Image 1 (cartoon, one colour):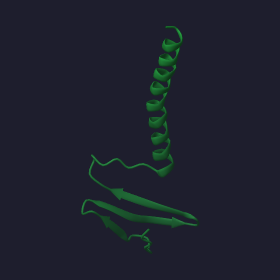
Image 2: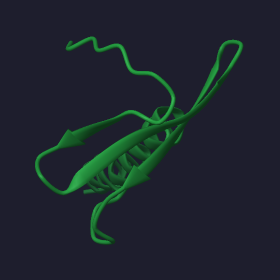
Image 3: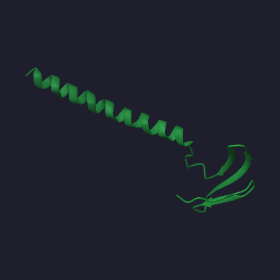
Image 4: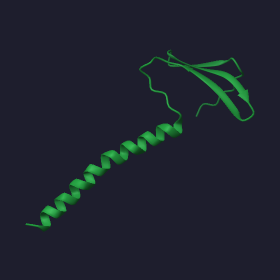
Amino acid sequence: MLVLTRKKGEALVISENIELTILGIEGDTVKIGVSAPRDIEIYRKEIYLSIQESNSEATSEPQELLRKLSEWKDSHK
């Protein structure tokens, strides 16, 4: 992990087209502005992880149903 120190008004540039600007610091809270192309999705990490978990559950449920159907089919031959 790269660790950088920035002050209010200072920015970071990522891959030429993403810019993070420190807008303010209040106690333990840092306000960050993000400038990026519209086609780049930006999420808070907890939201991103929730989306990933939901996607994983959505893809595993049909597989579980197919397994149960196959077991039921095998038991009724």
